Image 1: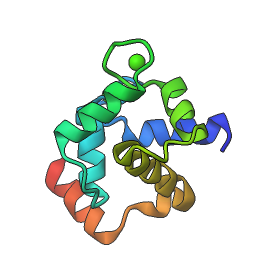
Image 2: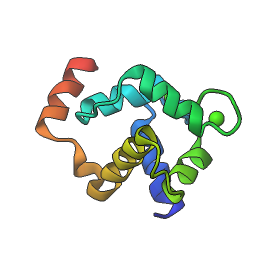
Image 3: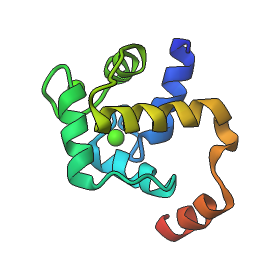
Image 4: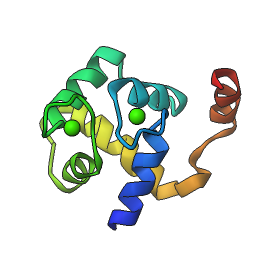
Length: 106
Ligand SMILES: [Ca+2]
Ligand SMILES: [Ca+2]
């Protein structure tokens, strides 16, 4: 993945548009994607990835997640999978179900 692609992933998951992904942004998106991580699990994963302790994931944190092997941590693996899934299908990822939910949430 290029940094442009990482930026797209970041943007996609950054619900409130502040340029960083909070646990809240993440769980919202993962929920739309049919993800199975709970908010507290997402919070733990974010904490594990957060390199500067502000509780938010920035571009560097995402790149780190995607480039490193996180095989032993289920939460990180799920998260990585979710980020990777978005990238694979690009903007076409949102399923009809996701669009429905989007309407519901916005
Ligand atoms: Ca955000
Ligand atoms: Ca951070």
